[in-house]
Amino acid sequence: MSERSLSRREMLRSTANLLIVGSASMMLHGCKKAQFRCDDISGLSEEDAKLREALEYQDRSPHGEKKSCSSCAFFRPAEADECGACTLVRGPIHPLGYCNSWAAKG
Ligand code: SF4
Image (cartoon, rainbow, N blue to C red):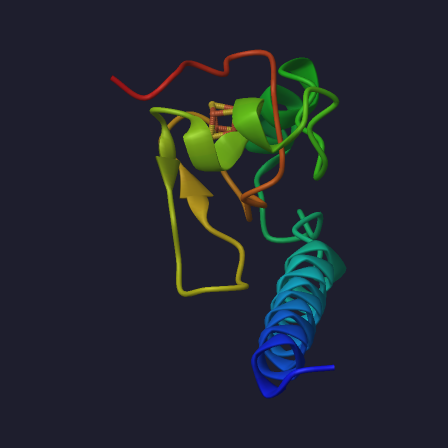
């Protein structure tokens, strides 16, 4: 086997290793993002809690990340991996959440 084919093989192996490390890192970040919850509504007034319930807010969008709070025009993000806010629904809002008033960002 020539040195050239060995170095090509090593390069392919290194590339594969980088892809594996990158994928693992993205999966860990995704897991971290999914771990925290934004469902503590103990600080809300009864009226705000009822509106949140009426709009069927949930911490995980049934439509996936593309149609979740993070892609909604009413979402106000916080620091990374923390609950954000919403201009319509009071209380903590998960970036991966959803409610029936979802509207695409303009
Ligand atoms: Fe999330 Fe609904 Fe607020 Fe949009 S309106 S950010 S979908 S809670």
